[in-house]
Amino acid sequence: MGLVLNSVLLTGDEDELILFWNKDKVRRYQIGVNRGDVVGKKLIVAGFDNRVRMYEVNAESGLVKLHVFVGHVMSIYNLTVIDDGIFTSYSYDGTIRWWNTQVKACFSFFNFKKYFRNDKILCVDLPKFSLEEERHAKFNREGSALILLNASEIVVFDTMRKEVKWRL
Image: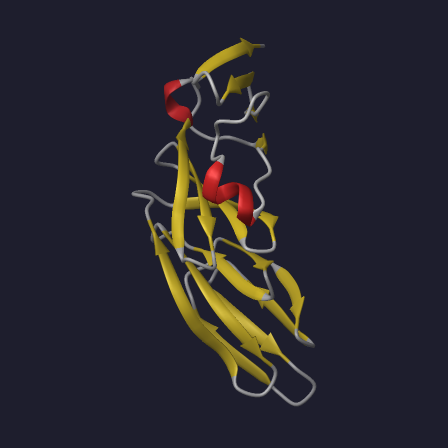
């Protein structure tokens, strides 16, 4: 993992260590991290402990934990930033969860294990939610679909009708 935020370089490794590099010094943070990204000028990191943590990144004081998102029951293996305040997490528990960083909550989830024979999703084309749409529409928009890809198949799921449209 390597990200730049607020004039700071953040790197991570398999030893669950995040290095915080600014022009003056290097700080080390022991944080269980599997994936990381930036959402709304905040650092989000997913760990093997089923949680996503959100941090403020300050060039002077370092990382400041703002919130821990809890909802998955198994390790998280991927994150995707959707919008300035919305991201998704993918877990080995078979769910994709949509999170709103402003209200610090999960506003929707999808259980893909019901529709896949394999346990891990490699790629997802997600419905795009703005913060305003999240409050009203959720998945109930006409034409809203999840496109899920793993090592052996592609599934298109109609989120309005809650059914598989087709499978390859």
